Length: 130
Image (cartoon, rainbow, N blue to C red; front, top):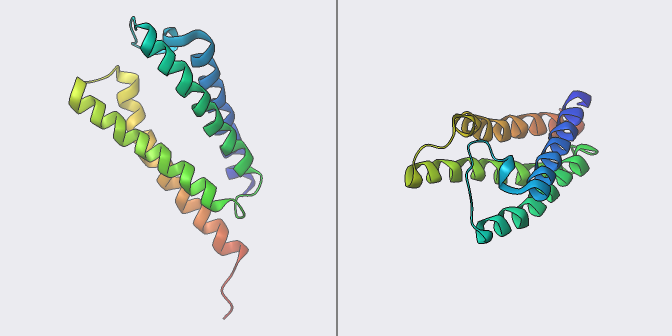
């Protein structure tokens, strides 16, 4: 369980770091990004604050995997839905930069792996009596 706790913590800190980069430096931090108008820049920085909170929630949840299992599940669901949203954007606007194409399987598989591991830790913490 300790390795998974460390992973969730590192994942959360990385997300916060990415969010802060987007917040502080704007669209220039996007791989393959181009010029954006003031409205898009405003939205980018606004959503970066929410993304930072998302990462902070992972750091918080890592401290008690079993007790905060549902939080980890919801965070995973959000990440998975983000991957689906990326597919939708691809279908509507065309292929993104290759980096973001490679992120799609990560965004779809990491939450599933998290869910499997969380269930394993829950079962270990609450064994069914024989």
